[in-house]
Image 1 (cartoon, rainbow, N blue to C red):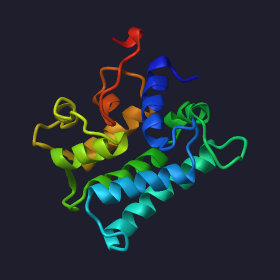
Image 2: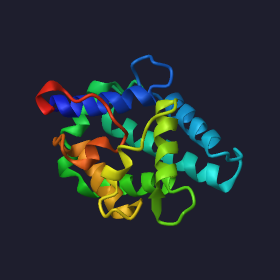
Image 3: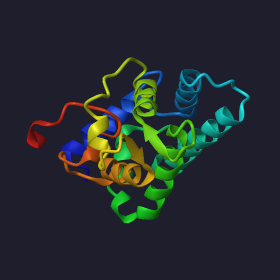
Length: 184
């Protein structure tokens, strides 16, 4: 059963992804997020970069739907996501695969690392508003080289989705949120 910290992390991300605020994730929510991200990056909708970003995001939707949609109604609740979170510790290969795809999506210039600006754009796109990422980025940059490498990102991705440690850097991979009292 998901801990209060895991529930808080997942609920925060879920809320950012639930574009229409109806309490469900649907294909249209993922499309809206993809459209926001494409626009934030200044990509033409028919460009190769926009096409690849769409493939990654809609592929994540397909994976999430298949793993989480218990009642097969083509939408996912936060409780359905949390049931999958309980199993993620036993699926390291799937988690690494998702991390790799998301890393590719975030690494706008394809240089094999995420810059402070690329990270900020990701978080602001997901949140739909300006967000202070200056305190989070250094926590994610484990080696202090001013970038998040693929290895660092994968570690953080796994910590976020499967971890239960408030002190782990990966807790903050999607930005700051209020910790539950027991985790402070």
